[in-house]
Image 1 (spheres, helix red, strand yellow):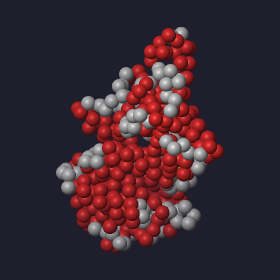
Image 2 (cartoon, rainbow, N blue to C red; image 1 turned 30 degrees about the vertical axis):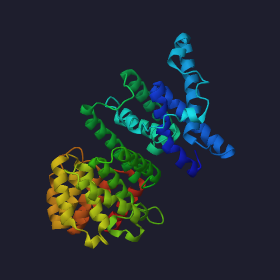
Image 3 (spheres, rainbow, N blue to C red; image 1 turned 30 degrees about the horizontal axis):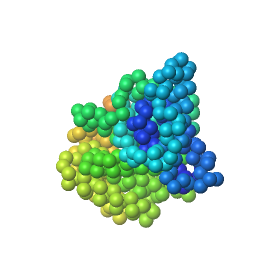
Image 4 (cartoon, helix red, strand yellow; image 1 turned 90 degrees about the vertical axis):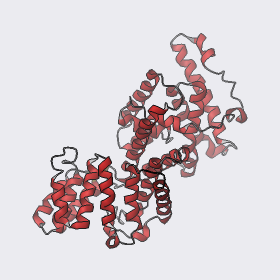
Length: 410
């Protein structure tokens, strides 16, 4: 898919079409392949033939016929042709748009729970979510994750085989399972967004296309679960963070830190929407980790300049977040808040307590924070060394260039 307007139409339809097929026929693994082929057919035919009056119905029709062919072929290879008629609707059953669209339900949430099944690895969950829910082809998923296409193919194949072997029914998990599974769903979307916000490798600081996919999927979950404060918090966090995207890089793609960003370039519409989501979600009860992170982002986005940032408020929010989250990056961000509220020396003292945490002691962010705080207290040589150490620990070229430039400047 190359036409952005066509992509904007097809990607939101992908999970709805897949849901329709899996609900009718089962066979998640084969149905997902059929939907991908239908999407490719649409991308090829619609620019020449025009977009049909009912795009979803067209896709369901084409995908259903392709699914029938795939299943019949599979059954034939297993010498069980006699079972095909019992398991699959005849190919002439779906013949009209009206029939294809008879059930217009949205099964996106069920699909998200399937893609976030706890038996799948995190890498497989992300790849399968991007393909099945994001509507991306395998090649697009590979480009999004900056890994070889055959790696993505293997991850997706293993994931679909695991789902097939598990015998998962096409239904929402039980109430007892739902909270844990929803947490996995949100975590997968959070990881996808983070990869778009700061690419782990490559020449560009950020991947706006990947961040946009994560936001779109988070909107979908929020639409299905509008009263869930953590779902709202995750969407708000994404919006409030993405709002700064245009200001985060300079003309040459160089990283611009928040305190030096031109805040007139921040997206006010995303900020307004994100703040409204935060305010409404806080009214619903106890705040979870995503909502607290969104609240921190809202404090930054409300500030007219770096100098007017309410660091005391941010520190209090991080204190709350630290009580419910054992995330070392949260602890590292709390160090920054303490340093900005009480001075760099206080931050360095708190940072020393994290050195023993192996989850963060080799992370470039640990050394970048140390470098910044050392620079603030005038320890130039130590700061320069820490900046260089941080640069060697990130695969993102824009971050490397920024950190080495800071080292050279001091």
